[in-house]
Length: 98
Image 1: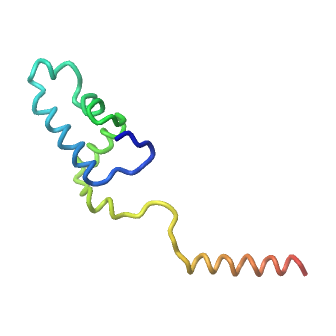
Image 2: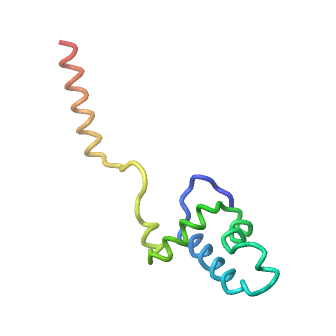
Image 3: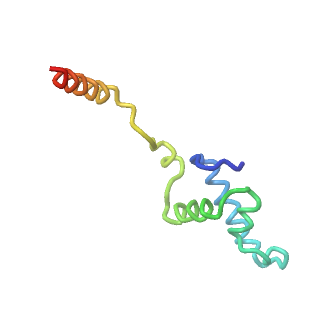
């Protein structure tokens, strides 16, 4: 599962939450007490501690992971803005050549 720099899907975030809650429930088991639940999740899923903590913080704040996944991240693909920029650049180049 180890993919650095990629966004987690809603299903992956739900898996982290479910696994963390399981470890919290089984913390009375002597064998399970040796490591904190966050570290057990990290070891089980081979992901970073920061990812688990960030996901749990979002979950505790009530973030809906499926709605959050719909949010587009990155540079917007706006053709109209791109055309405007190109037109402005052409005008500046034409002025500079005069």
